[in-house]
Image (spheres, rainbow, N blue to C red):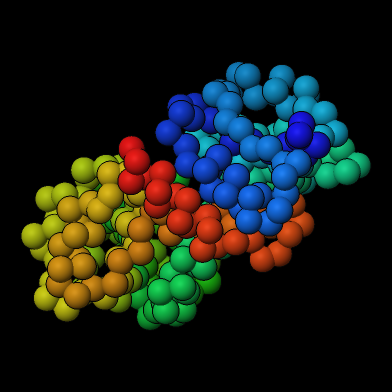
Length: 275
């Protein structure tokens, strides 16, 4: 049967993306046999042309780097959540031809933490200061009642994080990356850095750590996550984030609620195990 509704993930590079696995698993579980979900290698220059060619069969798009900010001028509207961090990872294509941008990374982070029993913390730490760190601050604005300490490598990054904190209503204190081991004193630590960056910190995990949210899913587990779990701390991983944000995307694009979280997670775990 040919697809009557289409969706896809766009980005560059895109071959590694697990989004097709997760969304197709959702379609299968929901009985959406006439839905298709693909991936396209698209950079900023190619994005406007791609959007213009989309027909009425298209329901939505997932966006990864480097398109989360580049897509904003091409949209008819964006949600307050997306506007708060100037990043769109979800585009819903409406029946009247409008393009509505949203960000499911932020509520996905909150949902992933809530699933592990973390609904509110008095203070928190963030490792890193990139795009994911700003999303982490936005998520913390919903669950953290006190100060957030961001561990960064430069004065410029420190200024950026304090600026995001002011914008998002979070009190952000910055500290040098060399002191990052102190992050683990917080009840919640969110690691937003690239693979390998936190490996050297694994030996500094305390005997009774709180919760670690490491946004990486490949390679997994990271050295930090392994050390954390060995010391009895709760660990939330990048696959948890990926699945929860994809659940929200499926619900927005298909209108089917709730999306099948368990089936999507199982599909993601199987795909990672096969790599």
